[in-house]
Length: 457
Ligand SMILES: Nc1ncnc2c1ncn2[C@@H]1O[C@H](COP(=O)(O)OP(=O)(O)O)[C@@H](O)[C@H]1O
Ligand SMILES: [Mg+2]
Image (cartoon, rainbow, N blue to C red):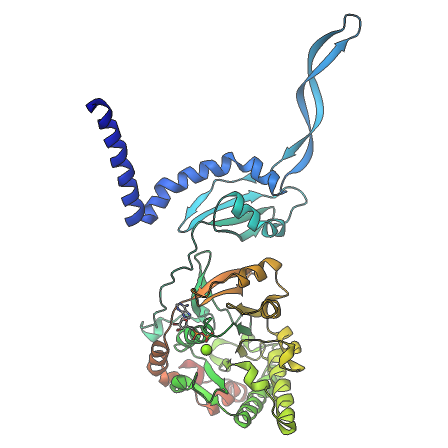
C-alpha cells in the first residue's frame, strides 16, 4: 500500500504546485510551462494547419519514389525505386515562436505569390486551429510576415490612465499630438496619432466608452502645447468640467457656428503663412515658428445636425459645410477633429457622408445595430465588423480602431474618470492658449522672422 501511495502523493503535490504557480505567478507560468509546450506543438502541427488554412502551394519536386511495376512475362509485381517529378504541398517556412506577455509572435516566409494580406484574411482560422483567442498580423517586410497569437484577451483588464506628473520640460517633441489613450490587443500602447491620421471618429452606443476616450484624450493632450476646443450641444455638461484647459467651448448652435467660422478664419490665415513661406503645411515650418495645433472635440455630433424648423436647417447646412472644410484642409494647417456620436451616418443629414469620407481615424465602440458598425468601419476589413459586433457590454472602452499601419485592431482606452480629466485640465490650465494667441501664432515668424513665443509654452 505504502509503495503505491508515495508516487501518488508526489504526483498530487506536483499538480498542486503547478496550480498554485499558475494562479499566483501566471506570467512566469506562461513563459516557462505553457509556452514551450505550445511552441513545440505549433511547429509540429504547422503542416496540417497551413494546409487546412489554404497557405500551402503545390510545387513540383524531384522525389525518389517507389513505383510498383508489373513484369508482363511472369505476372509478378516488382517494386522499383527511381527519381520522379511529383507535386508536393509546400508550406510557408515558420520561424521560431517567441513568447510575449499574452501570447507569442512568429515570423513566416511568404511563398511566391503570397502577400501579408493573405495571412490577415485567415487570422480567425489560425486562431481556431491554434486554440487561442485571436491572431493578428503585427508586421511585415518584403517576403516576411509576423503574426501575433493572443492567448488571453489583454483587454479584459486595462490599468487606469495616470495623468502625467513629470516635469513639463521632460516632455518630448516627437510625442506632440500622439497621446497614449489605452492599449492595443497586441499589448502595445494605443497612440491616437493625429500627425499620421488627422481626424478621428469616435462612435458607439451609450455607455460604450466614448466619453472615457475623450477624457483620456484630455489627459494625454493637456500637457502638450496644443489648443483644445470643444463643441458640446448637450448644454456643456460633458465638456465644461475641462474648461480651464479649453481655449473655446461652444454649447449652443449659434456659438457653434461662430466658433466654426473662427476656426476657418484661423485656417485661412495659416494657409496664407504657408503660401508666403513656400511650404505645403505647418509641419514643414521650424518647431519654434509653427502655429499652435488645435484639436477640436465634438461631443454628440448628431446634436449639431438635428433640425426642428426651416431656420435651423440653414444653420445645419452651414455647420456641415464648415466641418467639411476643416476636415478637408485641417491636416495641413494643424486643425484636427474628433467627432463623437452614437451614429455617424447619412441619416443625420446630407453632409455627413462627405464628412465621414474625410475622417481617416475610426474608433468603433460597442454598437447596438450592425449598420452603425458598417457606417464606422465599413471600408475596413469585414472581420473588423465581426470584431466590433462582438464587443461585450461588460467591457466598456473596448473598441475596434484603425491603427497607424492602416490595419484594424481591438483596443481599450485606459479608464479615466471625469474627476481625473478635470484634475489634468486644472493642472495644465496655464498652458491654455487664448483664442487671440491661437489666431496670432505663426504670424510673428512671418512678420519678423523670429519664432512665435506662444508655442514655446
Ligand atoms: N476603458 C474603460 N475601462 C473601464 N471602464 C470604462 C472604460 N470606458 C468606460 N468605462 C465605464 O463605462 C461607463 C460608460 O462610459 P462612457 O464613456 O460614459 O460611455 P458613453 O460616453 O459612450 O456613454 C462609465 O461609467 C465608465 O466608468
Ligand atoms: Mg458620453
